[in-house]
Length: 177
Image 1: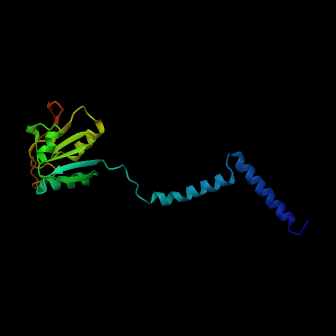
Image 2: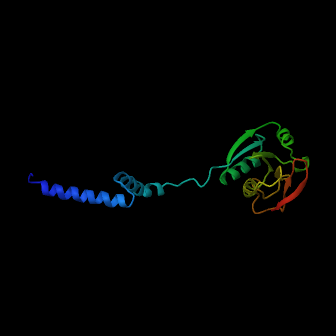
């Protein structure tokens, strides 16, 4: 044997023992290194904000000249929705196509996941409908209620109903604000 042989033999014995120990626990060198790398990457992953959810898309039809509609779009975007906005000359045609009863018409119409959201409906109620999926066509904030999202006027908030409607035109109060 050469002069370094006893040290090499000890090193090989230690390596064999380590490999045996790792094998006993069901881990080979490759698995150990991969695990060590994964554990060391945790601080890097944890430092980046991860999205809480994929933004729900709202397809919005509004008049190009309506300022309150633009404010409502800002409201739904700030609430996490992905707003696809279409400025159209005749919003009433969209409302009729999607079964919004005439008495519930407002200034803009939004569509998401098969539901219709008419007017200044608060984002939390849109989220509730999309989560619970009630057997309705949609909900509406008829007219342009003062204090509703997009219709803010200082601290004034007029009480108003958010109305649910079905495809056959039946209506009921969904929420009160």
